[in-house]
Image (cartoon, rainbow, N blue to C red; front, side, top):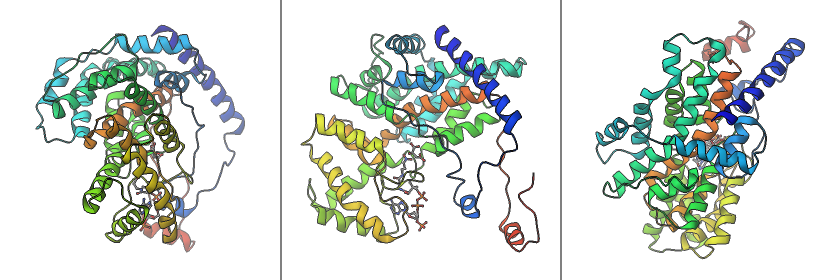
Length: 411
Ligand code: NMX
Ligand code: MLT
C-alpha cells in the first residue's frame, strides 16, 4: 500500500496548500448565483467535476486518488494491494446468513458492509483520540480494505441467494474485476471483460449524484468509511438511482411477456411506452438529472455489445427502445433529457452471459461505486472538509423573502 499512500499524501499536501492560498486571495469572490428553482429542484447544477476515462477499474481508482494517469506498474500495484487484503471475517457472512433468502440483495449487501464496520481503523483511531490532521490515514486504510473485500461480500450474496449457497474461493492471480467475475461463477473471458468495463463505468459520476453525495454527507460528520459508504449505497438502492438497472430489465421482460414476443417491433415498443407513461410510471433507464444527451456510458456498453454480441435479441430490443423512447419523452414537453442513461443497457449484457437475476444488478453498481465515493472520502479527510449542513428554510420564509419582508440567505 506504501507507494499509493505516499503519492496520495504528496498530492493531498499540494492541494491543501493550493486551496489555502486560493481562499486567502479569492475567498470572497462570488462564483455564481443560485436561483430559487435550483433550491426546490435538488441543488443541482452548482458544482461540476472533470470527466474520467475508461481503463481497468484499478487504474481509474489510482487516477481518482492521485490525479494522474497510472503507469501499468501502478495499476499492478493497486491490483496486488487489493488482492492481499480481500479476506472477509466470518461474522460478516453470518450476518448475511441471518437474513431470509427473500431479502433484496442490496439490503443483504449494506448489512454485510455494516457488519464489516467492526474492522474500521478510522472508528478505532477516533475513539483513541487521533489528531485531526491525521484523519486521512485510517480513512485511506479503511478505503483500501473495504474496496478489497466488497467483491467477496457481493459474490457471497449472489451465490447464497441464487446458486444454492455454493461459494467459490477467490483467485489471487486475477485482477479485482476479473476475480469478482470468477467468484460470481462466470469464467468466460468475455464476461470478465464485461466486468472490467462495468466496474469502470459505474465508479463515479461527479459528486452530486445521490450515492456520492450521501457518502460525502455522512462522512462529513466523521462517519467512518463503512458508515459513509453503506449510507451512500442505501441511496443507490433507490429506483430513480442505481436500482433503475434492475427496473429496466424487469420492464423489458414484462413488455415481452405481455406482447408474447422476444423481439417487439418499434411500434409495439412505442405503444408499451405510452401505456407505461399513462399509468403514471417512469420509463426506466431514460432521463438524467444532469446529462442532456445520451449517456456516454450507454454508448460504451453499446460498443461492447456491437463487438461481442451484436445479434442478441435482448440487446437488439435495447437498441430498438433507444430509437423509440426519446421522441416520445420529448413530445411530453417537460422532460429535460429524453436520452438513455447508464442503466438502460447494462442488464441486457448481463442477461446475455447468463446473469438473469436482475435484482442483483444494483449490487454490481454498488461494488463499482465504492471506487469513486471512497476515493472522494479520502480527499475529504485529507483536505479537512467540514461538516455539511445546508441552510433549510420554510416556504413561508421564501414567500416573505419574495415580498421583501425577510432576509433568508444571510450567513
Ligand atoms: N420517464 C417518465 N417521466 C420522466 C422520465 C422518464 N424516464 N424522466 C423524467 N421524467 C419526468 C419527471 O418525473 C418529471 O415529472 P413531473 O414534472 O411530473 O414530476 C419531469 O419529467 C421532469 O423531470 P426532469 O427534470 O427531466 O428529470 P429529473 O432531473 O427530475 O429526474 C431522473 C432525473 C433520472 C430521476 C428521471 O429522468 C427518471 O426518473 N428516470 C427514470 C429512472 C432512471 O432511469 N434512473 C436512473 C438514473 C441514472 N442512475 O444510474 O442513477
Ligand atoms: C450516476 O452515475 O450516479 C448517475 O448518472 C446519476 C447521477 O449522476 O445523478
